[in-house]
Image (tube, rainbow, N blue to C red; front, top):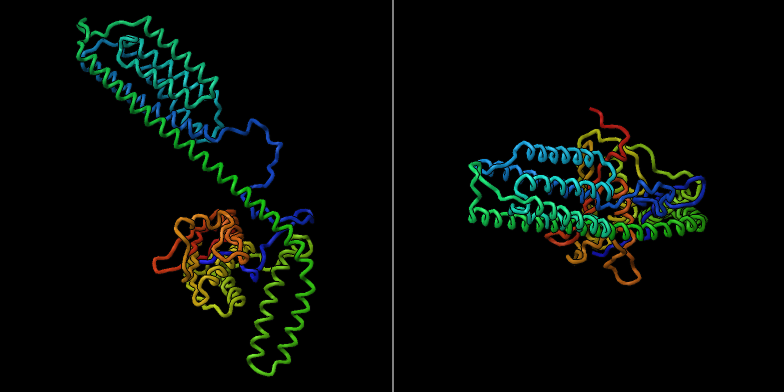
Length: 462
């Protein structure tokens, strides 16, 4: 499916702030140049909250394992100081509850907080180990897991300090090592100790693999988000340049369009046949569409109020978009079907959303001028709209590029893919998503899912 913006589509609506020409900030998901006066304390490593959640999960596994190990040892008749060990495990549980609550509230995380929690975990494990034979206990190998976690979550200097602390704790466990005994005073058998060592190693290896894989997945997701942010920044910069050029073009095109409108009106009055009157009417409709676009651009430059905004029922808004497309492309058969509860919710007729839908309709018409289909479904909270064509579709390995980069399947010089980038930016700004997919029976479908929260003026009447 050829994909690109049509030159006959009204240009994106732009607004001005303090009468200074500038593109509508709504085209951007974030300001192009963020305010640098923000306090540095507000900035944090985006990976820290995810790392803390991983640490909470790992501590939960440790608490469960420690509880089972102590209970099992007591049932097998091993002599242990149960009360101090239970107090240590309860303290770890309380720490997990507090950290989980802070994460839910969105409290900023710091490397210092992570280091403090790792130190408490290490101290708790060492306390439990000293209560259960010190280094004579086979679970002493779990100290290696502490080293892995410290190395994964802390900066290298803190990681070195943490590793030294682990070594010191191990030395303490060796210093106070005592053989494990049954309640009758008999030492544990070699077979029992060997089995405990095997179980300890297996658990350490499994938990280490699980934790490292989770951390690596979190880091990969972090990198993906950074790349996505960089791509959006590049797209926003391109849209910013486009807005500057469009504002200047609005001034230059006003006079020629006024002349064309006058000529079209005279042609309609002087028409001698129905065919001539129809052609003159089509020309007038096309000129009116261009003048509407210029009205929006002049509004961006502070010269006029953009027309077409204000409150409107959702079904009326969808109908007006289809009517505008039919005026722009009267030669393209359009099958329209929409459904939803009436009266429909009242929304603000966002110009950029209207133009984004026209971009999708025009691209579909370019791909299959013999048939375009549009469906819309809505309720009180959301709108789902699909624009489909009967063209050749897009290669599966390239379909994810639509709306994300300046990609087009049109011949060189006939398109750049800018229209779909504008569409995706507009829908994302309004909290929605655009998804493109190849149809099973041929062609391409663009599906918009849009929550109405940012457009809603009043709920539908009961």
